[in-house]
Length: 281
Image (cartoon, rainbow, N blue to C red):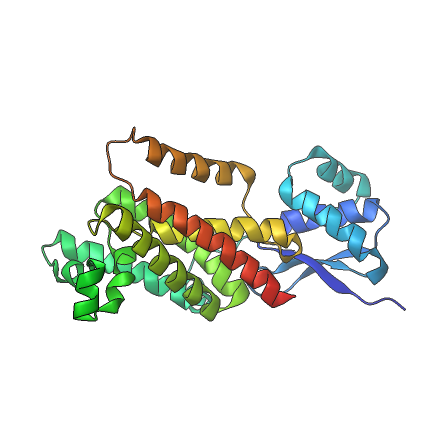
């Protein structure tokens, strides 16, 4: 007697369909399944005996989903693929997304509100969140300032870049592992990367970049450590972020970058991915 298990889940239908057809071509009992949620397009494995081979194939697919062999398998199957229509953007859909990732939305709104207030002359939040030297912090006991720089941005490009990454990767982690996991990752990566930046270059810095690099490291390593979870980053994106990290150290850009926070944040994210995998085993 065989039992069905979920092999992997995707946010879009096409990759789930392609992987299902390829598994069937390899004589593995697989099926496509749809269910409501963030990762609603699943590949179901019908026979536990095929699990190890199927996981290897799924990992290869996640690393290179554009390989022609997957599309070829779909064509050879002779089955028509009726893709689920894309949902239209509506207030209801936006509300559902916000409810599914409330902490992601909260940090995004706090960053945006702080930036907008500063640009109309209200700088009190910046003064309240600005990090202080360790000695001053010990005297003032204002320990929230260890996280404060993550909410501060100094240009439109700076905040847009960070918030796009935060929204894309943050809601992925929150919807998969829960609010508490994203909260812990935020506090851990923001606190450690901010302290590291403070010790190396002093208190004059800000931005969500250290946390963003933690998200990149976390999602990147989850895709490597646990591909069956359906979470990962394409290699070109990882390459771009690593190159951007190196560019910051070279110093060829006309802006000052919190390089220490970026590097430490990346390491924090990789460690947190390892923690999630150990926790899930």
